[in-house]
Length: 256
Image (cartoon, rainbow, N blue to C red; front, side, top):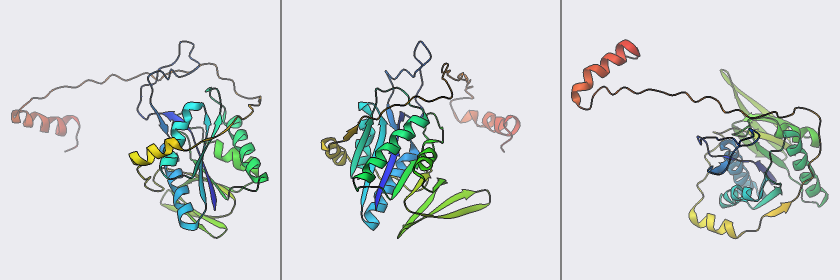
């Protein structure tokens, strides 16, 4: 069972986003980066499947050289290999990203080293386009299910569960298939310092994808949302403030 997990290098959750002067890109000078929480679960699921039924777990990302940091995190989480579809660092559209992944998967198939299951995060933590996994499935002609929080693999079938209002849905997909997963699917393992150091020594495969032109939407500019400034009122610094705290909770907030 060969499982491919596709992930994306994204700014740390909660980081302050600053735009470049031309409003075309994010200023990454002081930003930390990580992988999306959904994709951490996808990596963990790939590793668990490979451990349980035998096979390999491969992590793939499209981005600049710096994105190897996220691949090595996946390797430290016990993924078998990392693949970088190396770019100059500019943002690629969902169409171009999916096309690059499709070309890589097809090349592996031609070499007799194809994948039985392709896992994606349901959406990335930055742009949240919800598109890449679905586009890849469409281009490859594979069955696809999204928003999954329960997944098992039985022989040549994937059984996937999705939460809905007042219940859940369960799907059976013949393999190979594409599944996009959500945070909560599992509890991603913690990559130890030793595992991280070992991952630094492992070679990452590099592929240079071709970026095709496409008609469609054109980015005009990026805008940062206005930050709301909150106010705090100090009710006291001793037990004498308790009556005032109770009054605020009862009369103003109405939570008591």
